[in-house]
Length: 132
Ligand code: MN
Image (cartoon, rainbow, N blue to C red):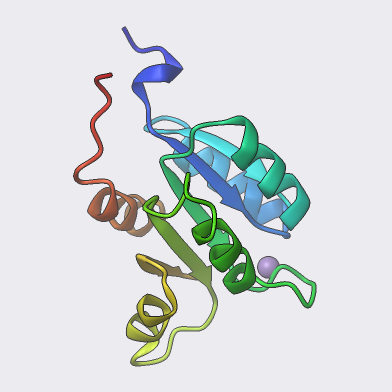
């Protein structure tokens, strides 16, 4: 019935406030976005909500990166199989393979368009089923 529970919940973690606002704007029609600007907020939200996909900025402005966060989430049985996408300005040939080898399900390179973001998300949520 068009309630939020019909939508996949995406936790986006990004230390840049403008990018976080942009992510909310791009995601909100199709998904239920939850936003975190640092690791602590992210882990707290991940503990309180059932997350269907994580979108993690790599450079979180601290020594602790999105790669550390991905590994910490993967260590939690609740999130071991949840899709995790990297959001990064690194876009070199072979980057996708590198991030996948680390444990990410894919990545979105910055700057990104709404179309590119949603297409990558759709690709990893293909099997997501909203029916309980
Ligand atoms: Mn950042």
